[in-house]
Image 1 (cartoon, rainbow, N blue to C red):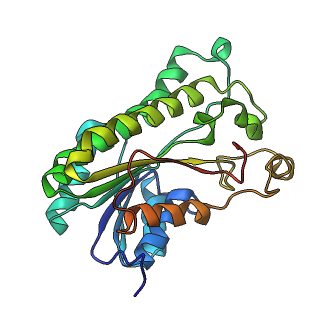
Image 2: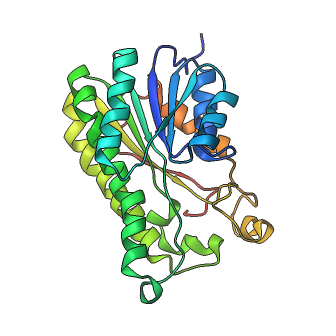
Length: 251
């Protein structure tokens, strides 16, 4: 028996519509392990194609993570179809590489809305269902930048103000929510990826890889494997953890 058997588990992943991204890799692996996965995004045509390419166990839903009503509708649809929701991966996020002096209020609010308010709304949307069921796993995709600020070097930027601020906020939110949900057997953990080879990375990837102690970039599947572990029943006592997946960049 596969110890990471996810058969019967129902999981929602935000920001997973882009092929080749972390969310799509997570959806692929989770569905291969037996889960029923919904990927949410705002890129509807591309997202629907991504879901179709990942097989019958993956479906697509329009999900604007900044919209509380949209979250409620998607979660209600999933619960109505399956009678449960076992996992949420708050994966949606955007990069912003300017310092505070060059960041407009509008840009700051945009990054906060997606990177910080999005996970808040997602967690809130599933909270009652999971706590009433007495089980569930929430994974917040944060960043190695919320473990050590200077690691934003891989974007050739040490001044990613809005991005860094929001990732530290979600890091803290993970801890607070883990404590709140622990009596209900609902686990909340955060992943802190280093430079992962996706379209968000950009730049000269050879130079970026050279900055990582393992001398390579992470791959989306490197993140997907840990998400599968956290969604499984293999770690029932693990909550509030911060897990670096960064090739030793923050050691």
